[in-house]
Length: 432
Image (cartoon, rainbow, N blue to C red; front, side):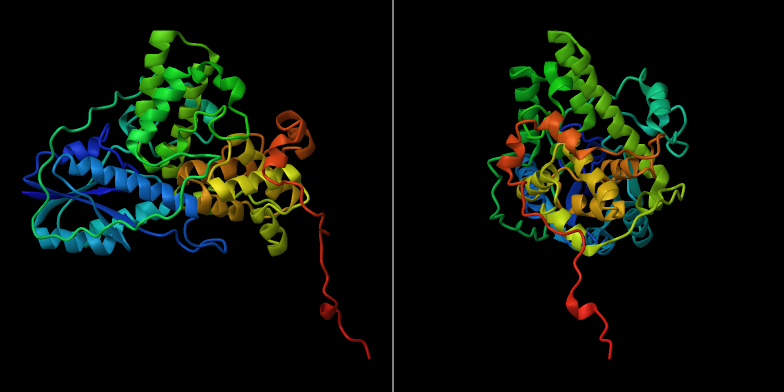
């Protein structure tokens, strides 16, 4: 009996229920299909730092698997081509993968399932709860966070499961392509590496050694990574860590060291992540529509020059410039920084929110379809925000979070002022 497990956003051995479901096969082929981001909102591909982090995470997973006598086949292209061909070649009796939100992810799963001659089994994704625990079902989600939180906050998150100590061998006679060698290094300003071990080390250091979790609510809005934030989101996004592992670590810390408002805030933010996950499954293609699932349109446009200036950190707003330059160099931006930059694009520049969401998708180390597009919709007023969108006054945000302009100075946020509109003389009609 030969089986295939298709890794997606679960690049870990520990707390990987889907992988464990296939641990009793006679032979097991482990596959990851690398698909570059689709062309979207004038953008293609993956930013250098995001690509670097994903490569490191795949390499670390492959090393962990090789210690168990296994390997990871990393293929470029589309899963609906590779997986059926591999299943036929090895005579697989079933294929498994974990559930991930997203319209294009759903389409890929359905196309794979149609192309296979054997079952495609869906396993628990990177969530705190399984769908059967939700009192309203995964397809009848509350439209807003507060009723979701009230419905689930008394439900205990699932306990993480241990990593397998043994796995079936891979089928014989297959070629395993080498991973692309990464020549991009982690920036000194945010020196995080991909891989499950690196994510677990971050939990250990930030939570148990430094005990920074005790001040998290006071420091979480800092603009520099690793200073006040947990910075666990990159490992969560690619699945080097599970949300259940993080929740269990917080609960263990509270048992040993005590709880306070800050430790509770980490769990609160995990619930926000959970909300966006299940909301994205319900919204499906609506997550990418300009008016959201409810079709709530707002006045917006696309002005290419202002969008390009926003992307490169060359606007007339120093704090936004600094944030965007930080993102381009490191692949990271704090939660507060993302709100500030998004508000500038939507409210100050009047540009459609989806262009900003696509730019974040390209560059963020912790890009996650549900959280990224859910948060952008929230800010733009076409998603889960009952107040109909958020506006962040840039002068006030600068006074609150960078009063001495140290962050602005560090990232070169002060740029030469530019006019809002440029008219080329060649555009004027000639009057005879």
